[in-house]
Image (cartoon, rainbow, N blue to C red; front, side, top):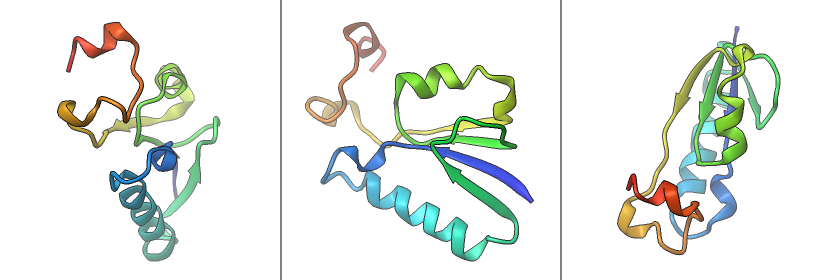
Length: 96
């Protein structure tokens, strides 16, 4: 069985659909693929695969740990919708 740890704060900002997409992904993994994947959420421990679903400084720092297994990250936002929805430090905004 593959151990997947999902890191997300997707439901911290309402009205963008990010939380709904994340919850649907978790639901599918836990109902349709329960025999293939053991899924944990926001746990700092050993895993075969770590999935970063949202931006978070502690998730970034955590990604350097060797026990995290393969790391996959994706975020769901557009630069034009960033203002007021995600708080990034000033220097990080120059990359958008």
